[in-house]
Image (tube, rainbow, N blue to C red; front, side):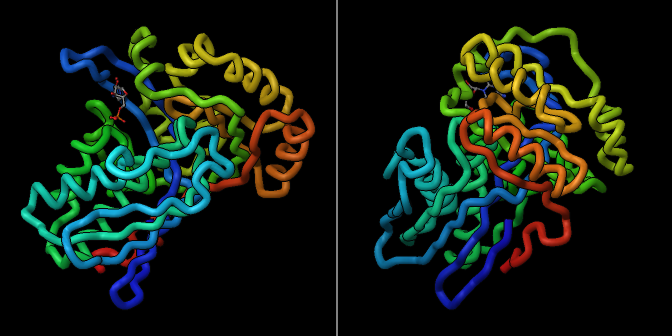
Length: 305
Ligand code: C5P
């Protein structure tokens, strides 16, 4: 999450995430599921531009809405960006407006957290532009109301998240993972995948966390886990197809991210990622991108602004 200010405007790079580990522990009374998930932010990023406007209107412009996306993004009040800003303004008595322009690169319905990341980004941006002294903890309270994955993006770039995802404990990631991302032509709604999942016996994330914090890629590859992958495979045939294609792609390991349908393949280095991507592209699995995990040095650079 990189924030740059230019007079009364801000530009924010809003990253996607991958789930290296995701275990569904059980269904809760409120309809959500308790989770244990290890998340890393990656350098596939949307760009948000923000500026304060006269009055108290919150407006959103979507650049290239629909291009490269499976479906057009929700507009106006239905968009998570507008909801997040509205909630922040209401909960803290702000009576100012905001204009936001979003240039979208992260596919939606992909399990990559693009919408959650955008919501966290505008909360950070609004704190600066509305000139309030909110701490990250205060913003995290609003973030949790907006969506389960939103608080992660205030605390990244690597964390273990519990509860419904909103209880975030940052982790040290000593690995720079070189990734190939595959976005198949069909997406899945998070709510639909959770509605069909069957929590199983809990799996421990301890070995994966140790691998991440000690920089042991070999051990990390053995500990990848996503208990939503099987559910997603039962709902969308592309998930099974990608499992098969990625098994023969020459990558070191792969997994679906979040509730799907995007997959990440871990490669040895950038050149290896190019070879894996070329092989996959020839099999036309959908859109294929490179990415790597973000390190902590630049995380929240520009904050507090
Ligand atoms: O919190 P968020 O709006 O991202 O969640 C979308 C939907 O996914 C929820 O309405 C819920 O149905 C499901 N979900 C869940 N358990 C979680 C997170 C999400 O059941 N921990």
